[in-house]
Image (cartoon, rainbow, N blue to C red; front, side):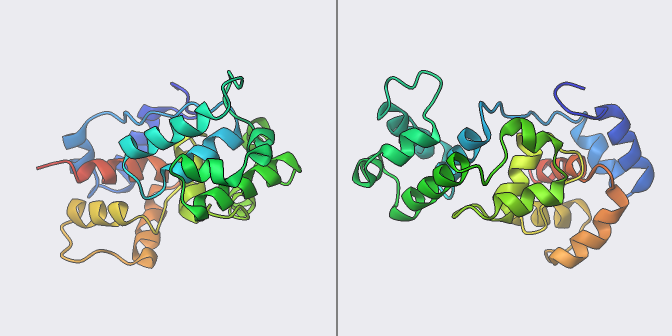
Length: 210
């Protein structure tokens, strides 16, 4: 299982049988090796996602580290209460844009007020319901919510239709000259249920193949 709630090998076998055109891609890439990111809380995971948006990992990590440094006594990481008490100017001084400061503050307010589930509660919710609740947060769109489901919770059947790299990987894997529309990708993805997360990972990896 390795952190996932499904058998990796069984998922790969299903994709090969359900979509023979995908089989050569899977064979070239090898075993499914997607890794989950550890999360101390739903708030921590989404706060990190907001900070990292549209930045390189190096730049985002530096900024995130500065935010953490604002709260030296928070040995387990800053909490919604820390953010709600923090001065907006101090957060901006860490390198956060005004939009990201507002987003992190909105996230903190919603978590503190109970509008969002805890991480343990999120595990029990269906994909669609969880996405619907997460996108109420300023700065968290459907794509960010889907990444949370895939890389934090290990949900097996997520297909992020608006992901540019995924569409590009699809075009390369299936020899298309143009990127598929989200609707085309969605239709083809019906073959991959209930393991569309696994198929997505292979399409992303397809971009790394020569």
